[in-house]
Amino acid sequence: MKAVCVCFEVHLPLPVRWYWPQEGYGEVHIEKYFDMEKAFHNFTKLSENLETLNDTLAESIDNGGKYTLDVSGVFLEQCKWAPEVIEGFKGLDRKSVSFAASPYYHSVCSMFPDMKEFREQVEMDLKIIKELFGREATTFVNTELLFERKTLKVLKEMGFKCIISEGSHNITNGYDPMHVYNNDIPTLLRHINLSEDLEIKFSDKAWSGYPLIADKFASWIASMEGDVITLYIKYDAINTHLQNNKEILRFLKEIPLSFKKQGIRMVLAEEAVEMFKSTELSSLGSKTTARYGMHNLLGNHAQHLFMHELVDIGEQIGSVKDPEKRKELLRIYRYLQQSEVFLEMNSEERRLGYERAVNDLSILSDIERAVMEEQR
Image (cartoon, rainbow, N blue to C red; front, side):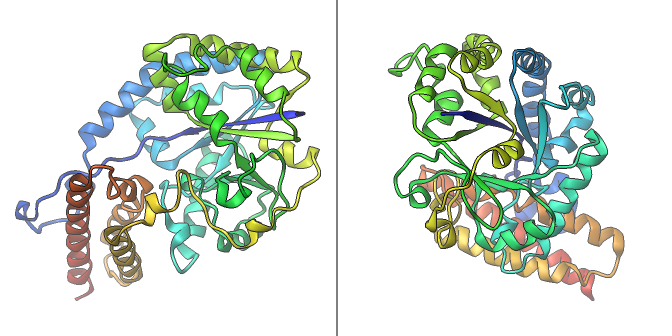
């Protein structure tokens, strides 16, 4: 093993409200469909520890760490509640931190039949990264690590150097992803088990790997064959560990030193694709994948119906005459594309998933009603 690429996803969704049509069919606005109070609570809970997390990341960087950050536009909009959060990310060493681009609204628009919406949201994300951080994003990460071959032409035209996607077994043919993979755009695939060791299992005292210290983790990677391991981890998950197990901070500080002892380099995603010769993986030409499987996003009738209605409404919004109302409708429509909206309709508790679907489709119906009224 020669290198490790670590990417953190920094994202908090805008949660959908429980919406009841009897509330009235009046004006359309964000607060009517989204629970802003809950969003503020979730953001505050994370932001309380972001200074600690970013300070720890800075110490890790001082020890040789390098990190790619995938910060959603939805999260950056919420930073209006605490602008110092953005300053904290700005303060991280520019040579050791890069920013990845993704669909601005953490949306599933890459699955739409037309790529226009996808291109626009990626361009929005590139723009806000440039405005806030003064950086050009050259790595792309699709929502939920979706791998959709039809996006590659668009991404290539936009100049991306590499993409990070899910290393699911239907893509890797059952093998662990350990290389840069040959594609229209060089591709890194998330190592699911090692990523989840940090994202999910780190604080689980019943886990056979507990307690996980930096030297142990580095030794696991050193024993593996291959060029580069890609870890993709939710930043919010690190914050959750912090509530129960502050050893996660020591782990982050020490992991670059432990890697160095094993002869392993930490690299940015765009550096990895330049360092290593790409490996053929024929399934990239024909398969689709996403974090925890495509069935979680489009595995039942309700999700397919919601997707169909979303696409239909998107085609209608452009004909709304009033520019201000069209802008607001478009913003709500894009928030409804968040992957979490789809994931909640596939709840393990079937009744809750059904209730979510009814709720979300009621919202879409109201949006469609508003669009039709504005077309008159």
